[in-house]
Image (cartoon, rainbow, N blue to C red; front, side, top):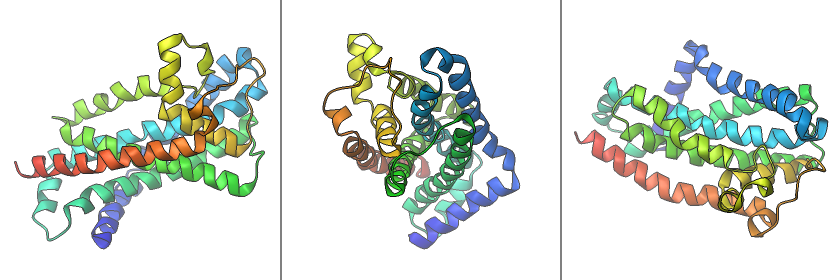
Length: 260
């Protein structure tokens, strides 16, 4: 299964190497969000201190949105008959999905590298220990891997590539913005504040800020409660919980579409 997964991942990465414009969405769009929030909204939210606060949220948003790569890639393979071709080969069914999610994990690593460089341009710095920063990137990439499996389910359930492109964003936008990725969740109205406090996007963003040593602007009300106090542990639990649910569901859906 490991060898089959590596071959499928290599095949997906070769596609990106031959069509590098596929990386535009993974890199240009987050750059736009950085400059939009840092210099248009950020000026009234805390200036340079807000830019330090912002980057962990941008990292988290970027890997969450990149789940669309898995969604569209699988939908494309499905409707071009590549999944049918793989099904006739003596290979593990899990390898098709594992190869896709692993190749998209590589895309996320490249996107994070671009975001880190952009962060240094706008004034973001890693103020904590190096090992804490490594742990922060590990937490973010674990979340990226989990979100790719959710994207796999969406791609396998989409009736066409066009539907897959829009279906991936329908749930990602509210998940991303009802959180503390870009603002203080304490400013949200009652029910939304509770949703934001337990949102995995909030937990991963807060874990990144904590481990990078990035503080909040003085005007932001500090978050309280168990998810905020244990953001690193909670973000890891969320990612593992998503994997525990999404991997079996994706395999079940793969068997369903492959049997047609």
